[in-house]
Image 1 (cartoon, rainbow, N blue to C red):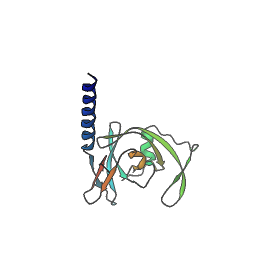
Image 2: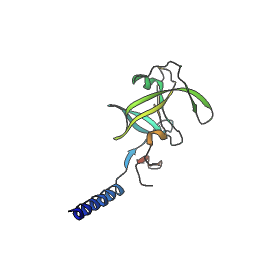
Image 3: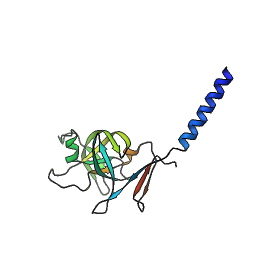
Image 4: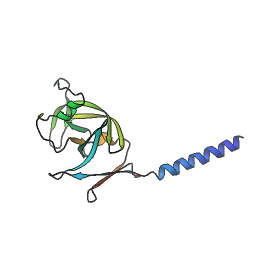
Length: 154
């Protein structure tokens, strides 16, 4: 009986490894904005899609203040964190987004940096997907084909 259990366990593990090795990546089609940004469809709960630019060089996901306010953010300017931008360090507020999805792929809860935006500004881009949105995943950006693959094998 023990030998049969060991054989069953070994077979199950090897099938599981084979299945994970053959896992298909999630392919997200990117769109190009009028300004030339490549954007991915981001959903917050059942709402969206909102255009967010994948930015693998950013440590954190950023969201426009006007969109963050629609999901419970209220600016108090009391709890500011240092945030490094491409050219400078700035002080910014944070907001936790719950149930963030990239296309059909769940990203879960994401700690975002809130980017101040005037409420009447027409936005072409609602945020950036930083590396914290892809924690534990491998991504591949293919700009000529305008697509992003998530969970690809290294």
